[in-house]
Amino acid sequence: DQYFQDDDDEEIPLRRHSTLKIKVRRDHLLDDTLVALLTADPAELMGRIKVQFQGEEAYDAGGVSREFFTLVTSTLFSPDYGMFEMINHRFYWFRNTDSTEQLRYFTLLGAFMGIAINNKVILPIRFPIIMYKKLINKNDSIYNISDLQEIDPQVSDSLKSLLELKEKGGNVED
Image (cartoon, rainbow, N blue to C red; front, side, top):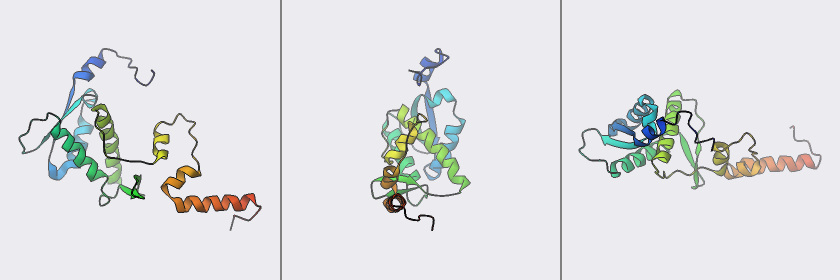
């Protein structure tokens, strides 16, 4: 499969046995996580994650990592944090923002989700179907009004009304 081929087959066993060790402070969770992920060796990012909360004695046999994933997820997706909003109590969607700070955290989110997938951790995140269409885009995904309907029914209905009006010969430019 072209998505899983590696030109350097000798690296694959190293990746399987590498470990990503992250040490974070609870009161600086996102910043510490971002620094840890951005400074980690690429092979470590493919390995098993081990998390330590600074000042806490605990062996990470999986529970500490699960808590880490839960805390980071709940922070990034918190309405108070401002990156996402919950739509119709069903899924998250991006908030419009021009914040450079949040761009850093979207980078963190991408790496974080990849590490979660690699570590077989299911995150409590729900996105609309259009998001998954975009993620698996093969340059031929087709988006339509029904995709918009899921995210913003009011805008979708307005566009449908305009299309119907146009089909009947009405003026939609005003």
